[in-house]
Length: 404
Ligand SMILES: [Fe+2]
Ligand SMILES: [Fe+2]
Image 1 (cartoon, rainbow, N blue to C red):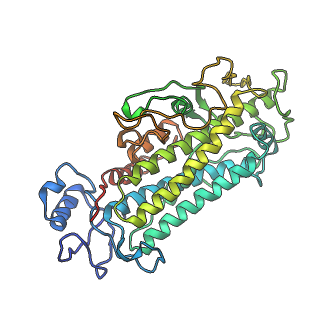
Image 2 (image 1 turned 30 degrees about the vertical axis):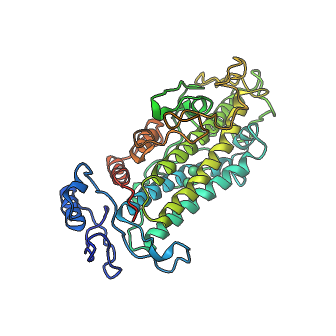
Image 3 (image 1 turned 90 degrees about the vertical axis):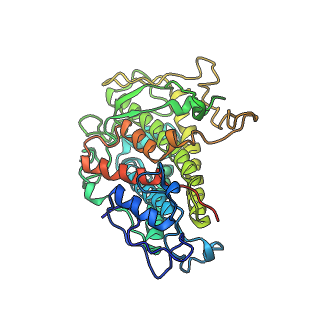
């Protein structure tokens, strides 16, 4: 069962819940939620326009023995719970996709040719893939444990595992939540972070590389034999078809890694603005900082696919081409400009180097689901999956910050 608060018994200040009335989670309809919220907050105006999942100023449960400096008065509100439940889902999704990369190309990966091609982006890449995967698994497990510790329902997506894994050597058996077999990777983040214009203020950005319907993992041994010789540090045009295709697949992965993690950076920054409990805020900014750390790493590695000596790879199957982005001598494409360019931020004030976007419309929970769907990460998923994840997203986006 999904959803937010149901068994809310308001305490005397009409906002906080007693620890004697722990959260019970079930699937309310939005009308029922509205009625509950009206009962709890006793202010119709507060509810107006909030809609599904309501607002969020109500502590969800007392903090029990966290050892945190914030513990005494910082129980999560229902909005905090909604934020964390969506983030738990996002982290499970991240874990699923990163695990697929790790099986094939991580430091203990099982596909030597894929690992060799990834190492053309950086000799340490398999280690980074394994570590990023561990981080995502820890994020998902931690957030769900926190929810459980506070009487809220953790998130499971197990029932939505239905997508077939890669057939290539190294991929493990078992169905998946996500597909990395035919991605549309949005690479506009590359230009966005080199630009002094801010998407939250209306700026849009072109693709750095056009990656449509491309695999980011090897699909089968017939397509890319696992023992294909991959030359290093470049893969010349005269290389075997299998070597060129494997390098194009690894390059696609390189851009996809950064796409995922820049999305995480924006999502966590946006969710942080809605947190009420200092402890939940601490969780969100602390994990969010690591998402940004991941992005920074992958931003650097993606650039190696489009700079010398590796630039120029063309997939012989699909025609996907990774040009030398330094050839244009444009600062919007220059590969070593990996640190976020100062950009427009708050009107009337100087440019500032910041995570962007951080608006609900572009970087909220629903925006994140839309971006991952447009990435074709969920190709083949069920309607129920979309419904479930989008409902969590709506509830997280509806959370409102309340202090005092
Ligand atoms: Fe994460
Ligand atoms: Fe991440």
